[in-house]
Length: 503
Image (cartoon, rainbow, N blue to C red; front, side):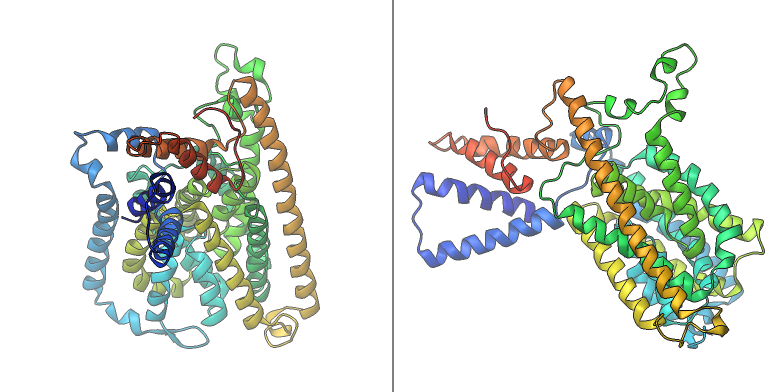
């Protein structure tokens, strides 16, 4: 409804001067205000889903089957129904509904408080690149006084249900994801996760785990905010754009070898872009071993800052990626190590029926949001975590950082500040390298006959939009309005003028 109203408002605003429509000034001002509000809502909250090419074609067909027409409802209902059947059966058989009122942690918090927390946590996890642990871990450790190992194990367990349900919804709706990132980051992520669980996580005391977690992602949020200040920056829908596969193939380290018979597999292995994704996955796996979340935001950071993939693709990609890796993490903790923490099972029981609904709903809502709204969720979440950690841990004092917790206040302040500076520097290097990569891609596009002046994702999207409006506009006496409207739409979204010439 908002999108339809916004289109009508845009048409009225451009046509009125040409058709001599006279209205009282107060009425025109009211219409303009209403149109501005509708345009804002339609642009940022009703942008529409980015579907795969095949899914879009199926959906537009007049004879589309019922499971395509109702893909959103089905994608949410299937995991919800399956999980609830199992949950009610197990809880009823063990008469375990008293788990909701059990008090846990140093603050003696009732377990159902986490159920309430995960209503918002699961929806945020499904809608953004921040996994459920981005809410669960800081709330459990900073607010409820629960030990980080318990919070981390709970994050693995609850995300293996919630994020898997959200991933199923995303894939069933056929929302655009970047499969290369999912595959390569998972390869590196599994290795980094095992290394982190065995070597890194046991060395971190609770204050360090809390502060390092929030510091790393605060630096990323600041970098993403700085990058998105550039109005109309060029973004791609995928790493391997359909209009020009050479963008991905140009990273082959042995291009001549891949042309030899039987050596086609080499282009999937000996590709420096693939190696970057594997390294990002390995680093994200270590972060996930520390706090239950990390590989999703690492993938998101590399895709958006370096490869300049739109947040509309990077967000669902990170959800699917996190779903796969948290299942691996939970299984490894249970069967490859000493087992998942007992208290984590208690929280898992009371949150499972919540997240299996919240995460898929978050994925559905998030798929309609503008990429800048998705980015804003990252800013707010990471900033709130950072401020909350400073308030609760107070690393500059000896309240939480003392001999009992094996922590030195001076050391944790200096090391956290160093991580913040190193993170900002690292993400700035990614941004700078991303600019160089964009220039290289522009040269590839020019050599193939594509104009690199209009961001590929936006130009395709807006051309479709203008094409839909043209029949309505050209029924007016003044046909030149069509060109004015087309230019106003493109200029508004790009933050500047595009190259002129032709309608």
